[in-house]
Length: 304
Image (cartoon, rainbow, N blue to C red):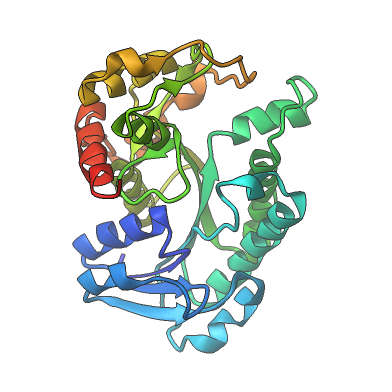
């Protein structure tokens, strides 16, 4: 891989992916919403071009770029990936359209492959759509699953290879949307209790540097499948993950398991299988949970 185009390049995953691509001498075109976006973090890269293009105008992107020999497109941009917007059906349905638009844009730009950012919550959505699961508020996951189905059709129509990357539950420095690890560390560093439900479901947490390493390998290598789960391979009961945060912070007594009601979210342990990813790309996680926590805690201390 010599040239890649990345949408959502100034987001949490986008920034870390740029670092991974930069490390591997890949020239990147970073697609950013507009000139009001913060791209100060790009100053550390010397092989990057920035193009401004709102998702709603993504079909115009080829008119802003002269290059037609990209190897890969990473479509990471997704409006309201966190916060209350995750439950807004209008916003989430627009994201489905933008992802389908990205297929045609990638084809026009000469990409041999396009990679999409999925989520483990799609698995819950599949159960809802099959009427075999509890109808929890998972509009975000449902729309991600819908996107996966539709881009499969669009990629077949256009003849472009694709990979749907189902992300694990992510954590690490520079996370701006919040996650269970970030919430817990922030509460503890501020001297508060961190309260949870029973937290007895199987769970997987993936440090951001391992996520983008896996994403790089999926873009670089020929792959047998169109869908891969990107995880740590270290499946635990959620409560065990949470208690370790307390131990590392020296505040285990402030981790309050069972203090909140059960929210009904259920994961199955077999959803977290990274065997296909490892066998097809040679991927192996490089950052242990403990080391990832330490890095994240040290960064969060600078923000509080």
